Amino acid sequence: MTDWIGELFTSDTGWTHLETLVDVRDRMAGSEGEREAAEATRDALAAACGDARLDEFEIQGWTRGDSAVQTPDGDEDAIALPRSPSGDATGEFVDLGYGLPDDFERADLDGTVVMVASDVPEWYDRYLHRREKYYHAVEAGAAAFVYRNHVEGCLPPTGSVGTSENPIGEVPAVGVSKEVGARLARKYDGEPVGVSVTADVHDATSQNVHATLGPDTDEELLVTSHVDAHDVAEGAMDNGAGTAMVVELADALADRAAELDTRVRFVCFGAEEVGLVGSAYDAERRDRDAIRAVLNLDGVVRGRTLQFHTHHFDALGDAARAVADRFDHPVSVSPDLNPHSDHWEYVKYGVPGYHVASDTDGPGRGWGHTYADTLDKLEARDFREQAILLAALTVELAGDDFAVAHASEADVAAALEDEGLAAGMRVTGDWPYDD
Image (cartoon, rainbow, N blue to C red):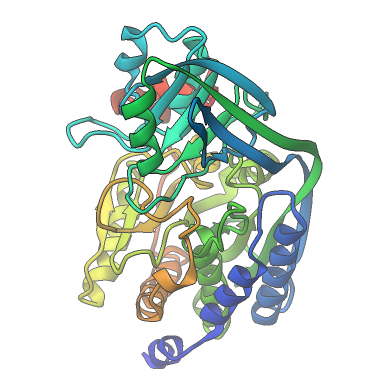
């Protein structure tokens, strides 16, 4: 039967929910907007599944105030990186280029204001997360951190600092546009500049959204996303589209529940953007041995072609390719590890998991984490096509004929070492294993 394909391709359930999420505007972790978006997602999942609930947890709240890079010629536009501490710092300005680990080792950065780019060179063998660059700067004694966008268009990037043990960072941190960064490097490299940040730090509450479909089995397949977004934009790509897709899949699979041999649990996490807090909270309280796999949607719809990171679980890659072949539709599959979204809080323990995003032109996040992460960047056509593929994959993963073995934590740790990711995770306090 293929009637479900036509029904899904003509459905407006998910896209309507995406519009609901972006119209909330500020979905910062712990905010009233995040709560409003979570409640709307709960109601949408309840309409599909018959019931849904919120699971609340405490987080470190952070609300931005003013920020600037202060030069002899006046202030330059900047936005604080979430969980930057409030404070004023002055020091010699150092443009450290890409901010590769070796760059920090070669420079004397004690007491300086360090600027790094948001990308890495094409020849470099791995992606360097913003927080890794930040903590290299902190370890080197920098007084402040400036994060320069690599994308043209006068857009400063955002993104959190801090660790799970110390949620507020150690030195003031701001983002500046590529153009502002170029001006700072040209005029002030080696000269004294200041960085100023004001922010309100407070206790707050976030929440995960849960709903289920299918039989009452001990084993579950998790289909996940995150509800929160950075407060500077609508968060359409990151990650309104992922949560809207979860809602679309729940609505589509509600009519196909008899085809599910394993219970499917839909979980839309809170507080992803400030350190995967919602997924960590869930993973710590769940019987991880009872999780068949995690299908985490974070970055879907940004491009037309789905991208699957499978974390060396070969059966997950085979399943994604099989669905793509069935529909004669291209997908991208990478076996490598990607420890930067909610799946990671399960995968690090050996739970099989996907990070599903989409192929885009150019390195880095593109419009993500900027003012330009808005609904007009997305195509309803891409949403519909991807919903069909992901619905088919969910049914495949929940079937009796599908099996994937869990890995040991030692195997995951060894893979992180082999792929050069372990050193950076130790710098950021994200290394989860006893050495």
